[in-house]
Length: 219
Image (cartoon, rainbow, N blue to C red; front, side, top):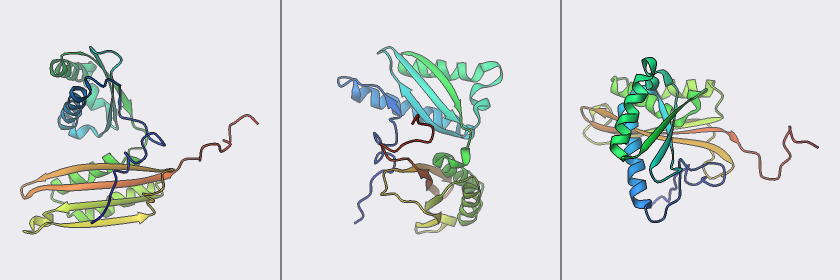
C-alpha cells in the first residue's frame, strides 16, 4: 500500500507558510473548525471567482483577519464594494467576531495548482471529455513557465459504472525534493453521475538552499 504525504504539509516550515496564522492551545479545536467553515463558505460562494487560497489570522480572540487570494478580485469586491461588505456581514454572523477581509490578486493564475484543478473541474462539469480538458490545461500551464505539471482525475468518468482514474504529466514534478516549489490543489466536479475528484501538482522551480549567496546580496 502506498505511503503518501500531502505535498504542501510536507514543506510547511521549510519553503511554505501556514495558511492559518494563530496560536491558542485551549481554543484550537474551536478555531480549526471555524477556519474550515470560513473556507468552505468562501469557496462555495465564489466558485467562479478563481479563489486559490484563504489565509486566516487571529490577532485577538474577538477578531479575524482574512486574506483571499483570487485571480478575479472584481467578482469578490463587487460594484462599489457591495459584495465584499455582504461577505463580511455573513462571516461576522458565522463567527460572532469582528471580521476584516483583504483581497490579493494573483498575477500568474496558470501556476496556481488549485486554479488549475478548478479549470479542469469546470470543463468536466461542462461535459468536456476529461482527457481533452487535461491536455488543454497542461499545455497552458507549461506555456506559462511551469517546469512540470501533473493532473489526476478519478471517478465515474464518462458515466461508467466502475470508477477509474486518468493521470497526465508533462515536465518533471519532484515530490520528494523539499526545496522544490510544488503547489498542490484538489477540487471536485459535481456531475449527474456523482463527484469526480481532480488533483493537480505544479512544479514552479526550486528554492535556493539556505546559506546560498543571493544575486542581490551585498558582497
